[in-house]
Structures are given as structure tokens and as C-alpha cells.
Length: 241
Image (cartoon, rainbow, N blue to C red; front, side, top):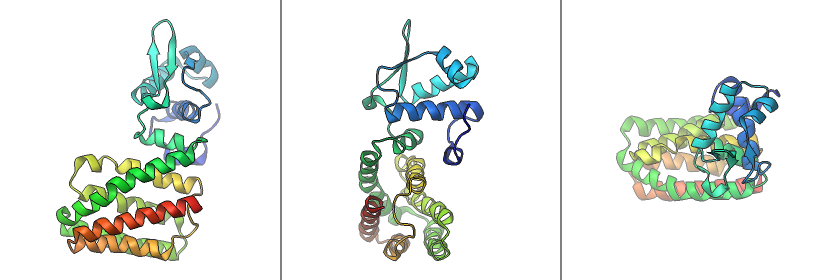
């Protein structure tokens, strides 16, 4: 069985070992359209194609069913569902769709989702974040500047993920907080697929700092506006990249 690519190994948020590899390959095949809606899969085919045991095949199907990518039908087999049925907010589904021919459409949809939610999360964070959390945001924004000046894209990415995840957490809204893994997958996907500029633009860095400052100074309206400006700019950089 083929070894996972470095990208797959980095992002693997599914099952360990063979389970994870089979899941990653089947999920990518479904989300890319290589296995279109209506395709029937059997456990025997999975065992033979991926050289895995029946228990591995069953566990893989169980996870795909939980994502609503497939459904098991008696006397038929495992049937691939249409994209309208998929759990599009599952981080793994996001990752697989980022690898598909529909990547541009996926990025647009995810950007619209972030613009709808993250500015409001920033506004709420300005009223609900603790002083320690607000100070941590300011610190992360400063470290992002340092990582950018050093040309360390990996470090910058991890700090960017931390920043946006903390804003969601500081909103105090548990629904928003559950989107942390989604945002992480989006940002990692941008790096993996070479989207956006090679080096963060100074304006984008300044906007991160401005969001943090607005939250720290309890300026809710400013936090909302600046976060929205930041996300709109990121969307433009992504399309240009």
C-alpha cells in the first residue's frame, strides 16, 4: 500500500496506521469525484485494493458513514452519497475537498463562512476575553511579526492558527469554539497548496495586531471591523496566490 505523503502525515486527524491511510485515500477519492455519487464499494474491494483486514475496512466505512460520505445498504453494499449529504464542516472533508478540482469553490465557501463568523467572534471576545487571554493575543501577534521577518512560514502558520483559534475561544460561544479545527485545516491547506503570498504582507500583520489591541482595549466595534478587513484581505491574497 502506498505510503502517505508528507502533507497527509502532517494533517492526519483521523485514525492511526492503516485505518488512517485507507480513510485518507477513500475520502480523497470521494471528495475529488473519482468515486462519484452512486458508486458502490464493498468490504471485499477495500480489503483487496488496500491489502488490509476486514476490521480495518469496517472501521474505515464506519468513519466515512459518520461524515455522511457513504451509506451502507443491505444487499447492495456501501454507496457513495452526493455532496449535498456530506458533513462539509468536518476538518477531514475540508482537507479532501481542498485537494479536489473544486478547490476554488471550496475556498470561496470557506472564506464566506469565516467572514460571517470570525468578526462577530472578535466583537464578543472584546467583551468576554480575560486580561490574560487578551495579552496572549497581543503576544501572538508580536511573534507573528518575528516569524515573518525570519522567513519561517511554518512557525508563522502555527501562530496564525493559534491567533484565530484563541479569538474563537475568547468569544465565549461554544459553537464558535468548535470551529477551531475547521480554521486550522483551512490555514494548513493554504500553505500545503501554495495559496497566498510567500511572505505575509505587513498590512496583514498590522491587522492581526490591531485585532488583538481592539480586544485588549474592549473596543468591540473596532475588533469586528478590523477582523473583517483582515479576512477580506486574506481572501484576496489567496486568490492572487
